[in-house]
Image (cartoon, rainbow, N blue to C red; front, side, top):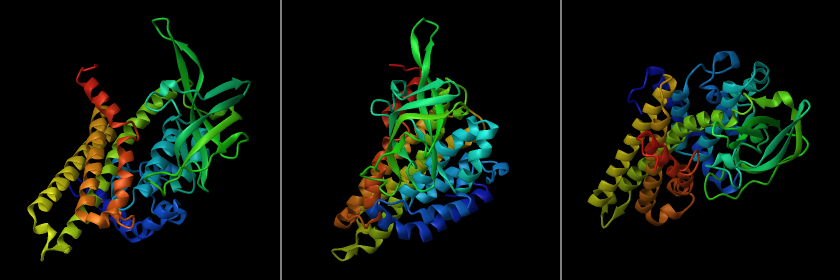
Length: 388
């Protein structure tokens, strides 16, 4: 954890690691079993200032950066990916779009409570036929006088149905635009839809394979009417703005994946040293030792990848390709480490009480969310001039 960290970053990582072990971990199995996000834990995260890590002090933030946020996400993901994704989505998908693209009035209205962790928000992009292909979005927002009328549906929306969820930033088709070649494309914009608005329905939560304690719902919009000033950012820039959000999110997912991979590694080392077979610890068997050595190599490589991408992001340097590579490498490491850890644990690794079992279920989504790994390969290939 110490490579390339400043003293403040080292202290932050240790503080969140201690919080994860003492507060988050003891609640993880129960929360996973009940499919419930422990809101008291979320409140404590707010008190620690975790939701304000990358935001300036004028909005109640910690004045940090994206690297600091990713350190916290990695530390949380070691013991509970549901809690880690709650923090990542709350900032990257909920608060950050308001901070980057919101008007002064929108920032003043929404940011202080988001930054304090008193409220949560989600971003509505994915639909039944629009995920990686955001251009296939069917949700519409029609401007009628000084009101947007939103119709459509979204799915897999994180932090959308908690007791403190306050709004969804909805990607919607707001018209058409002509390209230079004469063809027509959809104009995508982002509209803020507060919870409680008539016609906005948060559907029952999903029954998920993993991340079972995180809050995830489908959403329905039926003639939802919100003021024209709820447009977030410039009209027609919704897709372009969200691409930036996705690039940053991939670094965060890489950090989360690294934490998951490290959690599996640490559990495997502990178990291999304590589990005796034929009179000796299984760690004495070369195959087990070599498997754990490979797990360590994956953690090390993943951490270097996300930290490099995060440093470039914070420095204002191009980081799109680095973010894609970090997400690709780290999510693969998380899934492979989870598989290896489960094998090392044997039957115990098949029990949900085991952390490695939860990582085994949780880690698959890391290869899918924030752009599938196939999309990451496409981005990397294009950066090499291989458009295929």
